[in-house]
Image 1: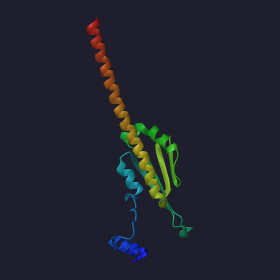
Image 2: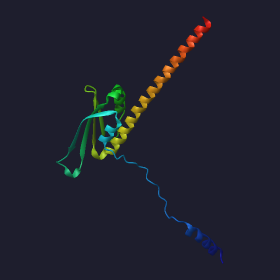
Image 3: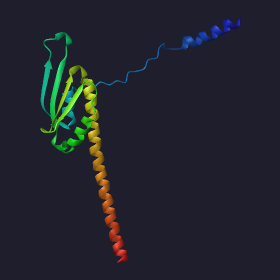
Image 4: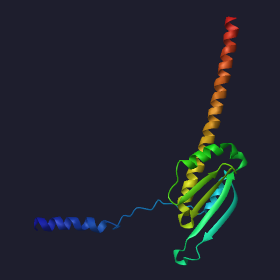
Length: 163
């Protein structure tokens, strides 16, 4: 038996024992089944006041639908209007128009229905930042209160010891 025959016969069992032929990576993209409107209602941060949808009948081949949603921050989050407005003014992804109307105290969201996944991702990001900021402020408030309590107790102890 030649060396090449021994190598090929040694490789044959290894190849036949291999159960699968292809390795594929699973997709990690998770689509949100909620519509933009459902997402906004479910988050509890905003209160939708009006919606509108426009098609383009002159160009039916475009198959585009333009969505407009008017909303304001709910009463629990109304004190954070400036934070929300600041986040909105930092920039938006392509296909998303989100504007603040300071005089009326509301916001206008405009987008094509085909960009709804982008809009949902953007809104989730903004809502998440607002909630984290509120959480941070509440924790910071507790820390400051504890620090003030500690300083008051320290002053009382000093007063009792030295006076």
